[in-house]
Image 1 (cartoon, rainbow, N blue to C red):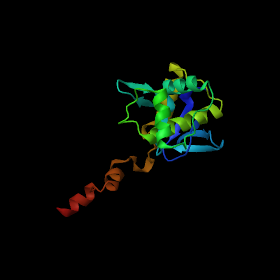
Image 2 (cartoon, rainbow, N blue to C red):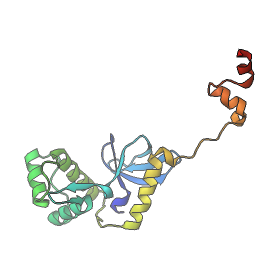
Image 3 (cartoon, rainbow, N blue to C red):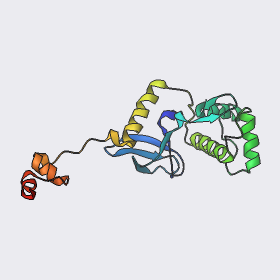
Image 4 (tube, one colour):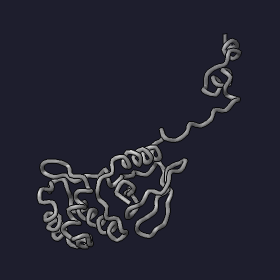
Length: 181
């Protein structure tokens, strides 16, 4: 599995693997404990394949950062994400010497290292790019997390008549208007 099906969900710990789309959202499996959760349109979801790290010259996709960490660690786990701020920044500088220290915070570095270690523990080591799969997964996630992606509600046949419709909206019917004059 590649990064195109790995998600970060705001307010939920860890990473999730996209399982299937549902009518109201989608199902995702936690890489921490294997539990499946239902994710609705209210959640802020990010695909790891769409996240980038600021450098002094450009934004580097997260997959490239993971590749650099993997090369440095020879495919094994990186430094513990619970290390001190100084140790994490020093480690990240050895991986990405041109990262923008003003825009990449210690908490961001901690999250990147934690995600990398979690992916390695779960056997996800393919950080290469798969364009056609990315576009398809992006459509699924966007459709599942936006209101526009849900089916419209059926109208009530009783309210289809103009009189009932205007009465429901607070408008006056013809007979009520004629009584006032």
